[in-house]
Image 1: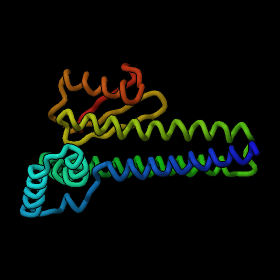
Image 2: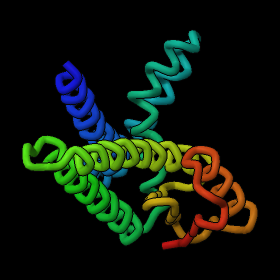
Image 3: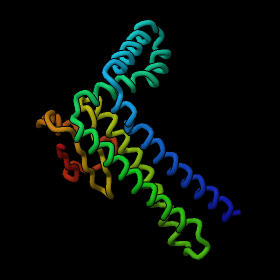
Image 4: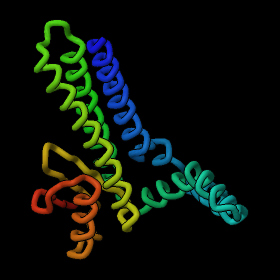
Length: 200
């Protein structure tokens, strides 16, 4: 009976990790189609979004509508202010991060599901899987909040107890750095002195 419960917990963790990586990739803002949109299409999309938002008065309807439409508006305006090199950098680094996380999940899943793995190895793999899931969620949360502070894009990587934040060049000053570090401390539980911020 205990063995069955443990297998269910392990399966649930593996599914949760897979979902977290997928959601991280999905909400990371990597939309190559938007990058190649023409200016007229961009203006049309922005106009539609503004029109829909001004017509809706119910706050719950606004949140549901903007979850689909405002992402187009935000991503389009972000792309407009980032150089092509910056766009490519953030897109490529997100892909690399997702691939690395997927490999880690596969490796941990193999250990957990292997009949030859010791009980200790399985327990350590489950713990590592939990930590990875928390790190993925924290990365996404930190990135989302940093973008609300006026940064067009950013990339957050959490490894063990340290956090690396990369933002576009031009907006990082002392106040912004303090704000970013506060976000990482609050959302990721990272120690203040283990947070590094750089520009690209």
